[in-house]
Length: 182
Image (cartoon, rainbow, N blue to C red; front, side, top):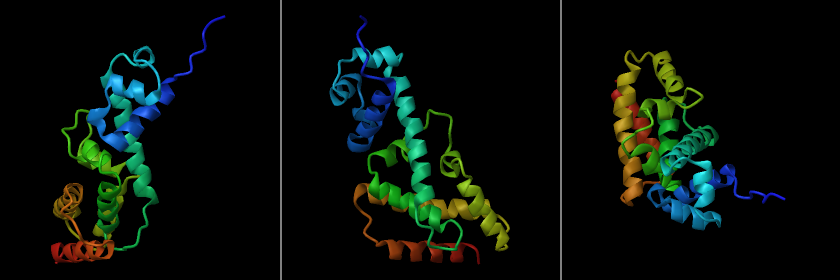
C-alpha cells in the first residue's frame, strides 16, 4: 500500500504565510518552513519547484489578507482617503512583519502600490471618485499628497516612532485632506 502524503501544498502554504506573519518573510526558508510544518524539506520541494514559488504564494496570500483587512476595517470617516489611510496605518500596527513585505520592499511581482491598495474592490478608485464628487479637480494629486503622509505614518508605526491615537490620526488625516483640497 502506498504511503499517504499528509503534508499538502495547502498546509505548506498556510504554514509559510503564518511564518511570514510571525517572523517576517526573510525567515521563510526551506529548512525553517520544514521545521515549522513538522516535516522534512522533501514535501516542500515535492510541492514547489523552489522557495521563490513558495514565497510567491505567500505574497498572494498577503495581498488577499490586506484586501480582507481593509474591507473589514471600520469606515468611520466620510472624507475621501481617510478610511483607506486609517486601515493602512492599522495594518502596519497590527501586522508589523507583513506590512514591510507588502509595502516596503522592492516589488518583483508586477504590482505597483496603486494596484495593491486598489485591491479586488477598487478601494482607491472609490476614494478618488468620492473626492471628484466633492469637486476636487485632480483627485490623483490629492491621493499622492495624502499617501505620502499616510505611508510616513505607517512606516513610523513599524519603527516604533508613531504614538498618535486612532482618533488623533483620523483628525490629522481629515485636516490634511481639507488643507490639500482648498
